[in-house]
Image (cartoon, rainbow, N blue to C red; front, side, top):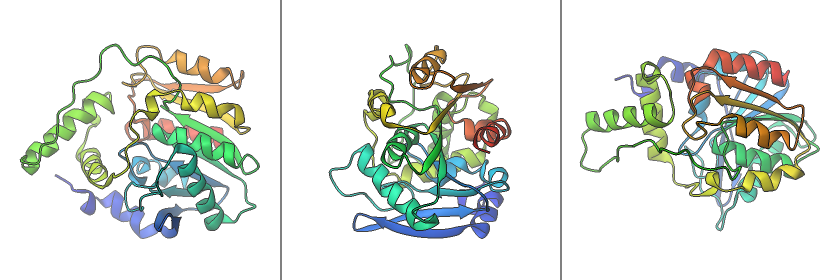
Length: 280
């Protein structure tokens, strides 16, 4: 299996990145920066890191200055101060963006899954800076859970590496990627590494209505992108669009055909093209 550390794409992006660190509690938040142009912040989902966006960064960084943090408690970033909340995590990110690009510079945010909840709080905290907010497969809308939850395999301490890889491959196909053929070795390696390094737990936040409660304070232009077969939203993707249109009636909401929850990985060309149209 092509492990994350030896992936040619990971190595290529690592060589090209500028790494910055900003305060996070008693430790540091890690930012990776690529490209030049208007700043765009990309936020990952739960059990994630910057690698949730690994297949989009090469294209988007040709047009924007892309800033991708490991959010507090994920990847190589330290834990936030306790007690934490979506708002307190967002404040850490707002302060970090200001240090990296300057406190008077406007920027846009695109955020995947749980990251969208944090991004909405970020936009509410810094309305004078966040021009556009793109939500991708984001929860927090207080909508009913899918009727049939996917059956996931537990990762047990006694498992060998082959068993761990097989379990993660199954779970990715059940929950994150609709086309099993696209659950490739890199996706599995990313998932294994991200799960191992995730210390913060979103818990019940994505199933709550926390996004609905913060959106009235968001002044940024809203956009939505969902996968047609998103396991967290099926069978009614349209309900997500209806909720977001309460806050922006002319919302640009797009469904990526054939894709599941992790659209940035499963459909990188379509997703990146949509983001380019939305964020230019």
